[in-house]
Image (cartoon, rainbow, N blue to C red; front, side):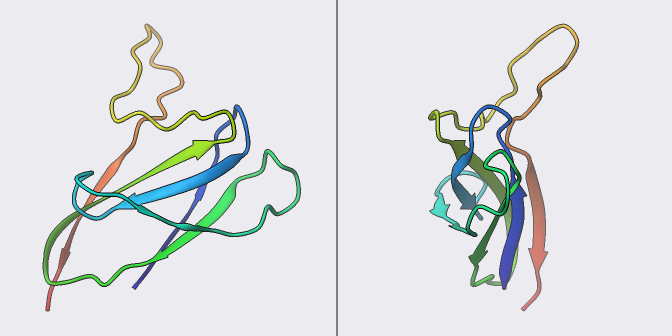
Length: 95
């Protein structure tokens, strides 16, 4: 199956996206589509995943040209702004 999405940094162009299918234990590089339009635009990515039966937890993290990678835990601030932490999605694949 193909996993796909969009990534955006807000600080610099996205240069890498990684996908985990095991709740962050391992990461695989996703393929990035060419930059479409402005260099600060959202960057489309995709990854082919051989989804086996069972429970999985998907996670995606992006890295930008300045070396910023999405954190696993959001940085605290009083207003709750700029929460760009990695989000996870549990999935159940039936065989």
